[in-house]
Length: 225
Image (cartoon, rainbow, N blue to C red; front, side):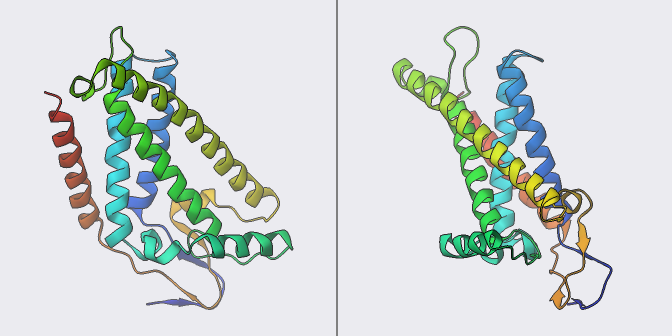
């Protein structure tokens, strides 16, 4: 494993993580626009939700067996580490991390959990007019109605979390002079002295896991007939 001790750049994000990130952004934006009637139809909204569920499932798999910076075991350190990191940041300390910092890791988990919950509740939701989720027929009308309300509430929570995430990225860019956007686009960042580059797993394995996620979601949707 190569160790960075001087200037230059180092790889930190693999293509599966970057594609997941921006595809999730696109699908959540599409879900919002279709729900508000800005573009396309509610059929596209349902497809966007199914896409979100597929991506989250893939990211879960990749977080178990993927590249170092993608693995939950590498970047999820728990609330204590996040609080210590935030206290240090408030005191003016800033130590660049190879991937997600401890606070950012918790945000990643929160966003994934909310997106997953949003997608799952969408499977059982119905608007009582034209559109219903692919599994809405498996529950009673009253249950579907309740899940639909939860679906709307969760979307508001998801939007709030996304805005908080964006605010944090802007804060790091302006105040900390640490551009977190470019690495998520290009996959590289300025080298961190003394820090080794992460080990990367083949994108072929990522493609296989994505196919598995697609198959699982398709199987779930098929339960609705």
